[in-house]
Structures are given as structure tokens and as C-alpha cells.
Length: 137
Image 1: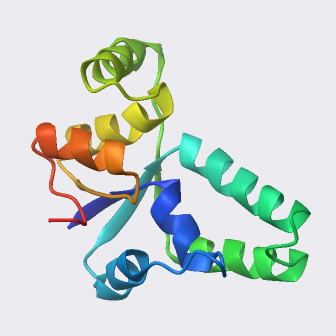
Image 2 (image 1 turned 120 degrees about the horizontal axis):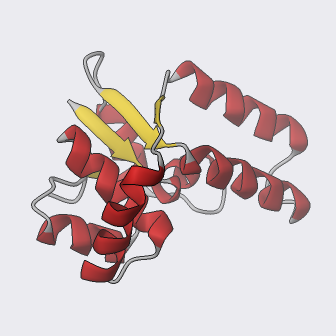
């Protein structure tokens, strides 16, 4: 199974004060045949979350590096788009009232015929409307 993961579900896995049973259940249920994929944007969001949590002393620098290693070990596939895909992102963001950033996750799930794992309720609602299976179903 192919899963698109967003930063909300990934962050809940490693932030000590954001324990999420949904994130824990999702990641612990993954099997060897499951594939995780993200838009390239995800890596920037992930890095920014780590930077902010270090600055706010929610996570130590050492623990942040361990977190990076953990996600590197997951062999997450990264999807890239080009200028031709911008029109589709715009249409999805307008249709589902999403930021272009969130539309990137929805777009990737649609293009890969993948499921979507997120804790973002607006993105979950949009995915459901678009007929995408989510971690909430």
C-alpha cells in the first residue's frame, strides 16, 4: 500500500508533548510492503518543525538528529513536480479550500492512487471528499 504522509502525523510521532494515538497506531501498523511517499515540500516542513522545537526547547539537538535518522531509515520516497503541475495544485486548493501546501499532499495521493495519513482535519475532510482513503477510515 502507498501512503502519503504529511508533517502533522510525522511530527506527532517524535514530539514529546504531542502524543498521538493515531500517529502511533498508524506508524506501528505499517508493514514491509507499505510505501511512504511525500512531496518535496515535506522535507522543508519536517526540518522547520525540528528547528522550531529545538529553539523552543521541546526537543534537544541530539534528539532532533536521532529523529532525522529515524525518518531516513524509513526510506521515504520523495515526489517532485514541475511547472505543469501548478495548475492542478491551484485547482485542488480552490476546490477544497486548502493551502497550496496541503493541496500538494492531496495531489500526490490522487496521482499515486495512494492513501493519506494526516492529523489535519481540513485535509482529512478534503481527502474524504476526493475519495481518498485516509488513516481515519
